[in-house]
Length: 169
Image 1 (tube, one colour):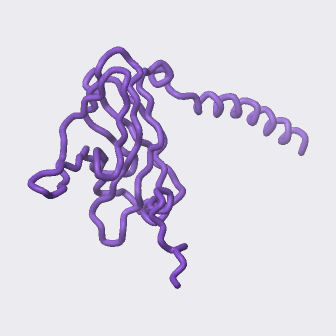
Image 2 (tube, helix red, strand yellow; image 1 turned 90 degrees about the vertical axis):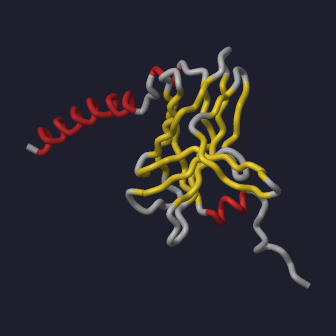
Image 3 (cartoon, one colour; image 1 turned 120 degrees about the horizontal axis):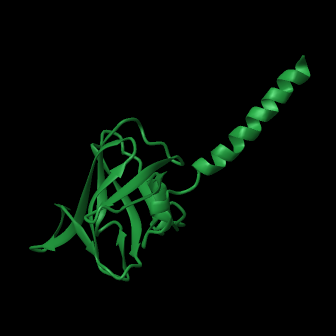
């Protein structure tokens, strides 16, 4: 009787494993895209903060300009594209409706430049976990990549802004 159940379990596992492997394959649209999204990360929300920022690199390997129109992040209610601008001696942030990426060029979404602002999380973002970032372009193309959740402290350490290791004499 035990061997009958064991045989059924083995058969079910053999059927399930190939289907899991297939489900992990990127969509064909992304495999043939000339757009490459990398280094995507989002900062955890600080206590009592209404928003946080997300950053990534986007390369356009095509012969045509691409226009980024919007972004979606799983488990985030609203996402806006922003840029920092220097105006009248002050740095300020403003929302943008689209961002053009020239042919054979790349753009970095980073502090002090273009970035995504994320609002209305469905749940607390936990460092080390990941969400999904999907970029939508004017021509209907979409690119999706994992979005890694980082803490502000770890993000600053990575950029060389960690002052906790300084020796004071």
